[in-house]
Length: 112
Length: 112
Image (cartoon, rainbow over the protein chains, first blue to last red):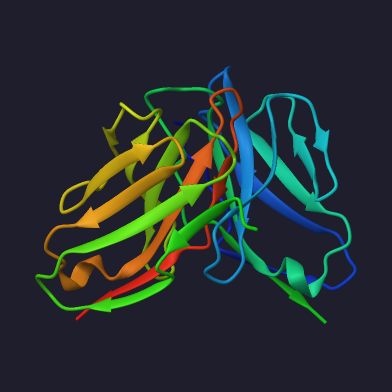
């Protein structure tokens, strides 16, 4: 699986958009970008994933650059409950030989 | 009711004791996983299973064993616990055709 690079921490004001970057310059053509988050020692929670096109769901939006070497997770109106560690992972969607590799992630603090 | 459950949620044990952590899921997924997480770090894969007759080692399988008793149940054993196995342990499941994994609430294990 391709490696990812994320900033170790970020702050965001409550009610504002939180934009979390991820670099994955060695991503392969068949690898998806996944985002998970972990709220204070709870089990990680799936947020969103995408291949090439931008994706949006009820939790967030995922913007992937045209060359696919980086992406941004956007939480449109951050709340205090969005304070968590956010993990960016790249991998093939259905690969019998490999699984998710969770790095240290970005610790997002939403401030009142 | 939670889709992925883990028992016990907390356990304190002594060096040399045998410990079993259990995971059950009601999602009907074929695939199940065990991860450990050390403080401030990402998750590391211990073992994974793609169906009842399939068991595979992950990154850090030494000192651990698993049993897939049924599609819905996947147990992790520490045959002789040691202090550096003190960690948070997460079970996860995924569908064969989809990419995302669903995590249990975790078991906090302390080995004295």
